[in-house]
Length: 286
Image (tube, rainbow, N blue to C red):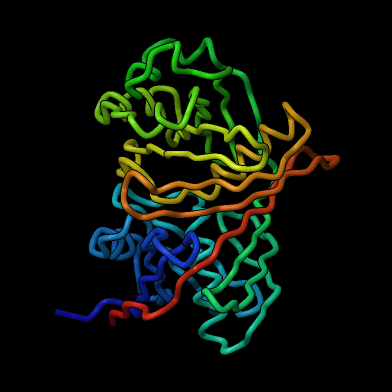
């Protein structure tokens, strides 16, 4: 049996040096086919795998696969990939660019005492109000009642649409028990990656969240950076304050933290997303 491509598993988007989402990062090989990449992603035991093509060193191309297949993009996978690239370079700081799904965007990686801090530009986030279009099916699939919803749900898309669902309080968020088969069916029917459920804290600037994406084979995500950027965009649009730090992963025993800041541009709302990656001791497979 041939060995797989070189792979490192790191913890992306840790909180206070703990937890984070185990994310596989593979230095891509030109001989790999997409079937090989998909098979590798299924073997890693992680929810997401980043494949880095370093043949164009100045702007590496990164692709992402989950157990169900290739993803358009992956925020915490981008954070993990950039941390591994910084580690491989031996540098303490790098300001560069990454190409994913036909888009090239700026990245920053800085070595800190508690890991590597990474920021990236998410790009334009499209916001739409489709509360009526969801009907009650997706809310019921989440295990929620209408009274559990704190405000209007919203569709946000940085390239792949997902539903932002505000719940009334933190206990409601933690007690959620979705029907994952039904939720996967509803998300596929409506064209959503998944549902990002969140509870804003009484003091501005922080929130707790849970991301459910069974339609792509991830029942609950430990960290979902792109959805945090979407929330920042929504908050900027509705309250004027687009700065947020979001805690996820508590129900999975893997505390994670992701920060985002959104701003208006001439082309629309954009966000910058950041998290810390624990690189050591990495799990290496070859």
